[in-house]
Image 1 (cartoon, helix red, strand yellow):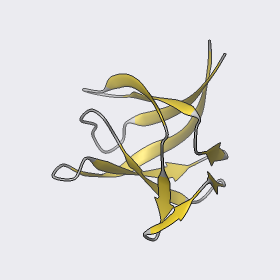
Image 2 (cartoon, rainbow, N blue to C red):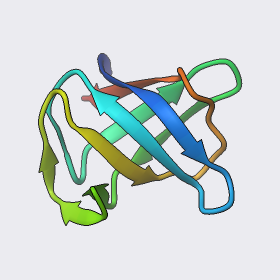
Image 3 (cartoon, rainbow, N blue to C red):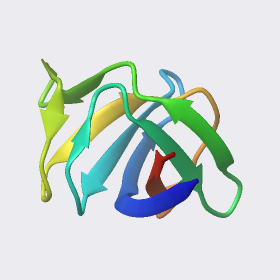
Image 4 (spheres, rainbow, N blue to C red):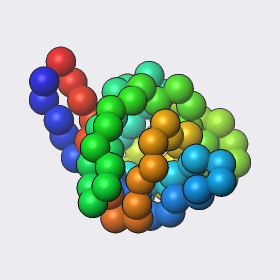
Length: 84
């Protein structure tokens, strides 16, 4: 599988399990992403994304998207899009 860097975690909200990711490349709902960093190393499918509390299906470079995550991450962790 090929992994392409698409963003970096800028915030992590522990109580609700949501991260904010600053995107370097386009990303869409349904993509599989790999979170990798100091304490994170897991893969998940993006079931939903939000920009400014509004649901979106796609986001472009420069956007900051909120994503619900299944595991703990840290600010500065990298986000990779996984392609078969």
